[in-house]
Image 1 (cartoon, rainbow, N blue to C red):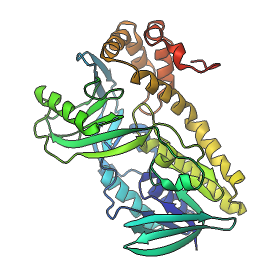
Image 2 (cartoon, helix red, strand yellow):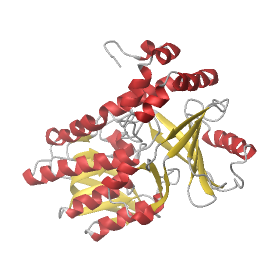
Image 3 (cartoon, helix red, strand yellow):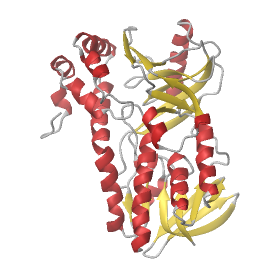
Length: 393
């Protein structure tokens, strides 16, 4: 009998295992994959703020950036640059393993290479049936944490909903020139409704990827072809990794003796698909909620509801405004994207954003609102058709 059973050994699950084990709780961490190589489609791009707030070892940082260049379909540029570091690339596989080892050091039990087959919850415990090397094992705990990604069937079985609004990503490692900045590419032939990227990592290496609703591998090939012609990348024969990212949140992220954290709950930035920082923030909120639950021995749905209330107080507005921006941008054709680039430069929006200390790698809502309030931008997109009755930007 464990205190906490965590399904999913990614960032949210392993970080929670570390934090809860540090409280002296008996924790079981289960991961379906046999290896712990991390999310291979993840670029590993995080903010400097995230680095300072959470347990990153300096050896995990591969690259630092203070500049990003955005390209429109016709190759117009928007350059975001500041004097100090704004973003970093971490070694994602090593980071996942780093967190798992922290959890194990604090006493968590870790099993990899298993698959959760069935889950039952009653007033007294959580019961999980696991296929472990073709042998079925049964585990019990006072509380269960679901942290196994957006396509978790467990949340649906527990009546918490299922996230169907997703975007697909494809990414590969390439040989490149020694770039010093992140580059983002827009265009319907590259990533319709979304974007592609070139993120330098180690010397003469970079990650190239795209986000799209459909056919991410085909669009990745288009981006690689364009970057090769531009002389930005050379060898592009590495393996392509794909994955899905939720764009909306789960119907409910808690129930009796259950919390849902990370991608499984849809705790992701809808603007960029980034989930590392949000997962860590929500994991801390889950830890504090469970700490209180164990102190008063109350694991009811009503008590655990404070978890969702708190994480939505922290991130709800960011996700709502980010998703509004995402819906708007998905409607843009190439001409509208080019025109938006021109407006942002010509109207002084870009200059204003760069001077605004609230412009942040992680917190986008205020910058999005400032852009949408610009009369020329609002006229271009017809903002009112995206707002529900009573909504205001």
